[in-house]
Length: 74
Length: 388
Image: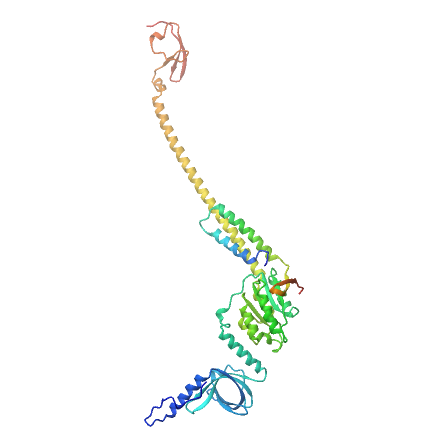
């Protein structure tokens, strides 16, 4: 449903990258690739974290078991 | 159940064919206990007596009949009511026969006065028992909440304080969240049905978590959250749930069924999302580990490179040393063999203008110019005389 990256996924991937980077049998090329990936994910996670806009929507049921979302001011 | 057919069982033991009193009361007890499950009985308390042992004895009566009751200390300690004669109560009890007195009696497990919402309380207890039977109150059912929810569905009134509280706590702690409000009426006649439908809808919007609740209110206001139907709807939600009904003391049925119970909607929001500052610290720690990981890797590579360089250098140095030694040896050999050494001993070499070595007298006709090489250089010479 949601198109933006999920913070949880980014964080999990980031942790996986760090784990791999800390493992012993890793050549430098791979380490550099992993580092780049880690930095990328870190950036995404930081962006998600600092995103200050909160979205509040109202869910309205429609005929036929579907629903639509509408912005809602709280 | 069939009638209490006490005398046709053929269980009489004595020679005269008569039952003993103990036999008949024991048999009666068995039959009575087998014939009833636990049940709720309504009646007026009379002859109440609390013994020093802590056990309670009383009778329940209505216009037509009465029955003796006992409530053991372990059970009456949990009852929040002080019993008095004349009080009308519901009791959850198990009928039995007290053999020593041959007395039909109720063993009371639970007791609720019919006033002060006792009827509701009774309904609640019944609903709770039904949920319990279906395993919906099993602690093993409780699921952990997602750590970083992206979408949170909130089933509540769209204009109540609960929604505002949840939104403001989430905005402060973890704004990177979509709050999907499923608007329902939380009190009044339609509340039960709307809550059920709302929970079902909340389960379809791909939320990571569902909060159902409302702000505080009177016992009547909160009643929909004690509905068995609503509780079952909470249990049916496929993602983790938080029940947040604004009351400090009472626990509602939805609280018991949800994965997490929060005392207030604000508390529900706190439980639902992590604290941004704490997570930022964690991210920073990860960033450090990440950089450290790469640095470590580079360090390792550098060390390896250094070691390889050292080895290379050492190998080459050894090779050069070896070559130098050989060169020196060759040099010595060469030196030893050098004709110059002969010259040092006092010999000289004669060569013509083209450098050919002159070895025979015949090569020295009178007047011939030639070069004579001695130990420290050449001299020009001429033959003044012919062959001697």
